[in-house]
Image (cartoon, rainbow, N blue to C red; front, side, top):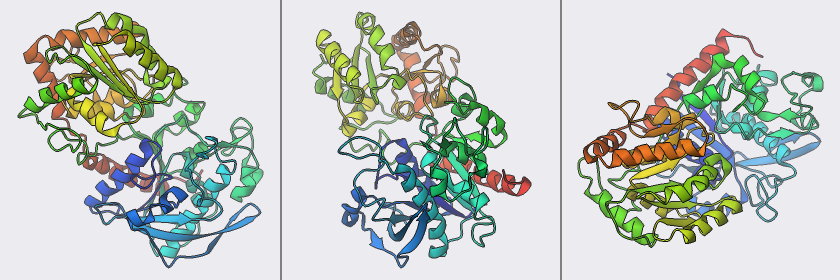
Length: 498
């Protein structure tokens, strides 16, 4: 079994979070550690984190002033260290005055625009990581990179570090959390990377429509690649979901896998959830009904506990299916139900749903903005949860919903397809309701089927309980990653480099 892993990520919860990558980076290493792996995390020491260094007990290490060459620039880094809260998993922070002392993770918080030197920042971080492990005296068996921010590291292992005493035996893994973000830069980034332009030619590993695509490089050079659900791993090999990389992904399908993200059950568990007033479990559901009352009051909706309550939480964007919900809402509001929506994002949808709530008082409640505790309350208090995503690499809310006995209504895509089983199609094991076509009438049909099931109390209870008994633990996911690490080592030694 793999015993030593260096986990590399641009964001790690709770130190820095922009999206779901941070949640995975904060949870998976913890689960690997619990399985006996010496896993260490390395990330940039952003200005945002430096301001909270006391809160996280971040201390300097003996690794100081190590030079890194980025094109014509020599920039030095020092390492700082803390631990993942509540664990003894070390987290190393790469400090660079030039690249990371500023505020913001991927973009300038003032201008809301990407940093103009983002390519240099990523090149610097990749090179610093490769110098950091030897300086720390930590020789990993696996280096686990995540998304395009760190995906050039596998290329360095094969092209420049293949004879390095520490790096020569190390196998690389790349996890793709969302294929839509690829890190595409101008050709001059090759000079900054210190790699020759002989690799830049049409269809070559470093060329992508006249530019350089960091994610493409990682997919080609990593010993094994995975996405965050089995279905998404298949979908990204098609033109519809492949974001112009589907051909490449088909060509490496032998080393491409899908592993479902886990749920942090210390945070998401209806029996212990710190954000809900009434706890409950599969053995005693009474607290769920009380939470329904809490949610209805919070949204100023009539306290009718026998009317089905539908919840929707998530970034207000086309990807999440808000356009479908908006199209069916006038008809949906004629049904015997209530609905609550929590989300922020596209101003178009924020305004649209705020206006719709005024149009349907007593039926529709809308909260625009981020509100973590309210998200927990909705998951606990709603009867059903709608996730009509256009695409969904993994999705977490449908898993939260299942664990909270809140029956999910989802589109059959990505991680949604891997976790939700249609209760009409599979009466003995169904835990939700699933529709296939990205059309408003398909969503409406699935909601109507859920409403019909809700009317049959015994049947509804059995659907709820099936979901509550699912195992979405990070331990389960971590065991799959250990299998992936073994495969990466086999691929490295069983086949030649790119």
